[in-house]
Image 1 (tube, one colour):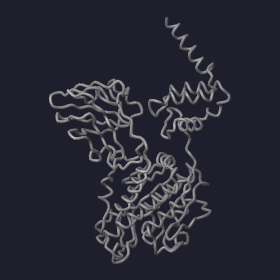
Image 2 (cartoon, rainbow, N blue to C red; image 1 turned 45 degrees about the vertical axis):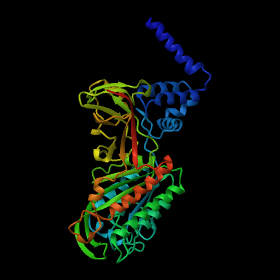
Image 3 (cartoon, rainbow, N blue to C red; image 1 turned 90 degrees about the horizontal axis):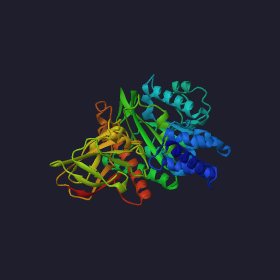
Image 4 (tube, rainbow, N blue to C red; image 1 turned 180 degrees about the horizontal axis):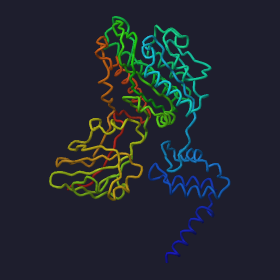
Length: 480
């Protein structure tokens, strides 16, 4: 009997792949779509079946190359996040437009041997090695962009970053208006490139102006700089990552009220990475800044809502009956155990390029009335049957309901909030330095300006006003 079943299955496979009306290319596309229609991961087993089919057809030979196969799969499934297990693409090579701000406020970071210089040296070396040195264009930026041509040795270039030396002294270094610099970088950004911008990111205010009002004005300018480039390139999916680092600083510090203080202290600075989301994500994966940065955040455009699955056994209190028509995403019926009902969902948050401490912070979420988020944890293998539902999932969220809950739908929302560190490490009065040496003047306004721009962009994409980064809705037909 088993032999007969095997023979039938073999015959069906041969007929499907070899004797059908589809040509090999159409069949390959169908196989890719069928392998990825339930999630965003093509497994090793599914990959092997696809590779065996490719080997039998010379016309498909180019797709033996993993890069070509991944490119085809993403194109045909219209999913840039699609992963193929065991078929990792090679590192993408793309242009990198590297900007080092060299206004006078930056001098303290490059006087003597500093951590700033070590990070810049390593960053330039890694970019040149991973994404090809000929694709790396280094610039100084203050009043305008000043390209640094014909760099023979990157280490020697960094060693010469010193106040008073020729390379570093280029341009009008007495002035640097942050929003003008951002505009210059964004307007010069090529579609097939990323921009890396290194700066202390301090807004310059007009003398005698109210700091809070002026900072709000600057925030609006930042928002406009980003929304302008979004509008000019509506078909480009932009992402922006910001990394906060610190370094020893020995030089003049210029406060918002035009006081100048000579300090020799640890000070923060920032590395911004801006470009197409796939290029920025590739940079973040390949370039390891983790040992250097203290905080980070990423902004991106997200059209998709995260997929989820209700788990039947994990952290459960009460009785669960799933709606069989909803692919394990909704309840047919729930029953309380005395006064409480609790369940866990597995969800895929890989589209959302936020730090894990942001995604797992319960305070960054809202949930329906009479519901409570008990915990949000990165997915780890489960020692029960629920693990079968967790393929491609990144997080486990446990939710409880009290007896007052009486709704047909539960909504969980990730709010469009700024991470705590942005406010905690910002100040509106930097005249207190050296006491507040680890805070950056007006940085929370800069951050909010970028966030506002991405919110407006998201509203245009989804055609609806919404201050949530995502929403998971779970329907409940009956409650006992």
